[in-house]
Length: 181
Image (tube, rainbow, N blue to C red):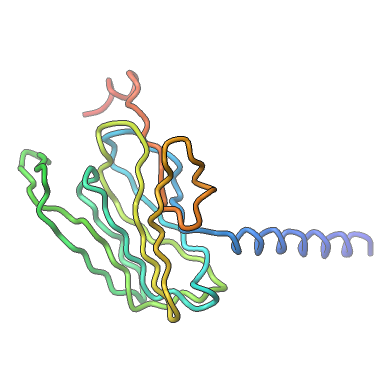
């Protein structure tokens, strides 16, 4: 009998912590960091809707220094990309690339406020180390949220009400550099 009471208390405690985390959830990147110049799967985690209403569109702006963005399709969602001319062309597999994907949109699906989901893409990260932020628009049945705030130097991301999802781009170590081809 004691075991079942303990189990119920533990289950309720875990549920309360999980719900509390979702109440303060933002759109975040699953990966806190990655190596400069690497190809990376980026997963944007969506933990809630807009004031209780379902999410029906996620728009991710691709920073100029990120290249070759390819979105992962999601069942029940339409996928579109916006291609723009680059201010600085780059070379990929021996070809000069002068325009690239600058925006990815998943739309037409329904993500109820009570549920969580992920939206993924594959990209080539910038060659230089530093912070990298992706501005995201979350549209819902009622309203929308612009996750576009970028912390100023020395400012905590936690101080922002609508922070853009971000990650640390780490320098290539000597060991990694020797093995990249």
